[in-house]
Image (cartoon, rainbow, N blue to C red; front, side, top):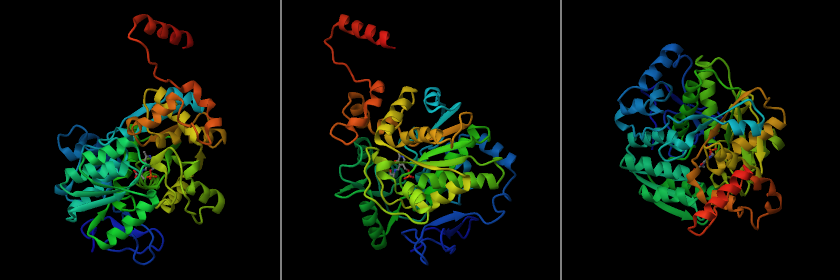
Length: 452
Ligand code: F0G
């Protein structure tokens, strides 16, 4: 059964490995010739024929003042760069439009002059997934599907459940039992998804889902679906607009299933081709050392192959051992001259608390960006005078358990990190339980003032 018709639009599908160009994609979004992933591309000249860069930039800016719901979305506002979907099928929660923050204290701790964070956790369901989901869920709606489904570490499922509900579709969520945060699980329940906690890990959930979509008319909303990547591209376009189209030297993203890095890199290359930006920022990808198959692929095999692994990290969002989009991510990382790094559990926890201390906050997986920046800075890959943008992928409140355990000093109790976690101590702010006594509160205030 075909689910993407690209006959009436200029965007076409192509296999990333064998180059086959199918008219439509099958339900698993894999190439029927070689089994690799598909991507959208615009034939030579198709985008530049639309309008010149100044006209496009002015149009996108003008839409920010429009009352039209699609113009108010930070994804659909850039629809010239997306494949065609009829507007009556568009499901939007006014996603995108996320803030770009100065991070002065983090800049100091990382040893760079200027550090910015684009906070994709400020999306409607509090993660970056909404930008891809609005577009891919709309595609499912256009193709007439009743059911959509995903395997997830929690954010994709929260986002999918919300967009399916808004589009009057049913959603099926497959998540690893006990390995996602309660915040994310509660979202998919409240948005009405059929939520199955499978006794396996994320990679096991993906395997079951791939079998399921072959047998049942269910639309797959994982990031192997190239429509997800198209929607997620717009985060980078919006970022460049916020920077007045002056690219930073570096953009740093977490790497899990690697859809996000693929999408941001694709956007950068397309914007550069279209002369929307004068040069390419370097896109670097950071993984947790306990879930680092991409890092190892690049380091040990020169990116020629990837070895799946059993992943383990407290940053549960990126607890992924067999990333689907690694080839796409590798291609854009190399094309932009970016790097890859791995960071430890303690480094992630420290970076997360530092991002919090800048008054911003994020979930653990997002904090790998700051931890990775410090590594890249030490390696000399990022220079002190260079400008850097971190992509924060999820909101602080997605995983309050992690944060509370960290501040109470319990996060690493009984783990192999326990003996290496003392550098995190100075950031810990455990809650203090007191009698309802003014003097006791004043004494705490005085002690805090003395230590500040
Ligand atoms: N950060 C957060 C907060 C995430 O939820 C994810 C992925 C990533 C980073 C990594 O992005 O997979 O595109 O490389 N979460 C997925 C999920 C896998 O199911 O929610 P990626």
